[in-house]
Image: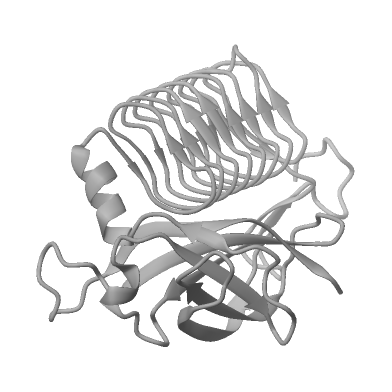
Length: 285
């Protein structure tokens, strides 16, 4: 199958500093995150061999460094490697000059165009994170726009609130002071002191709302919680409520709601199940 490399860029993030490196020296290992899809644009979930090569020039004529990672795991198209973890990086290779990175999948051809590595990992960190205004690490279009906000990694993530955080993932967006997205894909927070731990397409619109994971869950009431599940909604009247279920809606305050086809306490041989598998619905037993 033909694979397409999309939106790949260096993850300019300090990863490890061995004991022999003094404070302020360039660390010999940097992280790299990227995104890989097939020819139809569908993100891959597989394991591939990848070879990374740094060139002195954009044409790829002068090779400075290369290493091969035999088993790179891709999850929803995202992958992560440590450059220099197999073949040590020569500090002279990353001397502040623009270098160019090529990526080869298995025995196939290298990427059509080389990726410019504009900043050395440590110097980039010194310019951004050490200003105490914002910190950006990771790959591809991450933005820390709010004062003292942080994007820890991933692709196309945005932290746009005072002291807001996006730890990683892909296309996550947080706006609201002290709010945090832990990871996942296309999660959104537009509220204060709210949390989305991960998952896909989860949204918090109200202050202090919390979504633990799952997919397509949404909170519009303050102090409300959805720990997981799929397509659950707490409406604007559901303050201080808790909902766990599948395609469930809750719009009453101070409500604890579990809406699942079956709820079982204890193991499969003992305990209690609601609804009871042999008792007519609505009957107490």
